[in-house]
Length: 170
Image 1 (cartoon, rainbow, N blue to C red):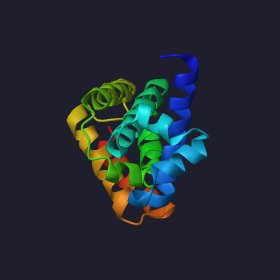
Image 2: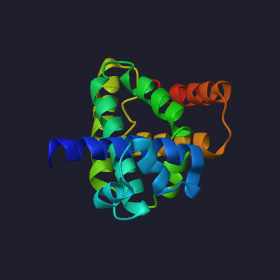
Image 3: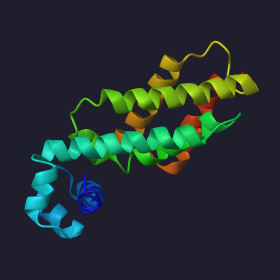
């Protein structure tokens, strides 16, 4: 992809994240184009449908999460990742709710990164040895769903994470 086309694509995705977070399902691709500083035709060349745009946003979000997980490590990396992910869940709610798409490659990458954090936490002795990746992923999904739909404030988020972390503790 040409450099200018790649820049346009990234600007469109940045704008779309903001517009969908603010406006929800009623967000228009015209507003996305305006905020990105491109013509509507440019948006449609990159993303022929709104679903394509939402899928791209979700894939990028999952890739960022996997990259974030990969930068963490050690005894507290898994806990830090839990806090960051749950903290971001409500902000990304609209995109996740609207994007009824399958993104297996991105989810697989995130699963691997979380598995590495789990391995490091277990090696450091901060997480029980009998905890496996599927349980950790289920906890992450459940906590994010709670943050998305439960009207969580920071205090509730912290109390809930404390319960989860106590359950994971070695």
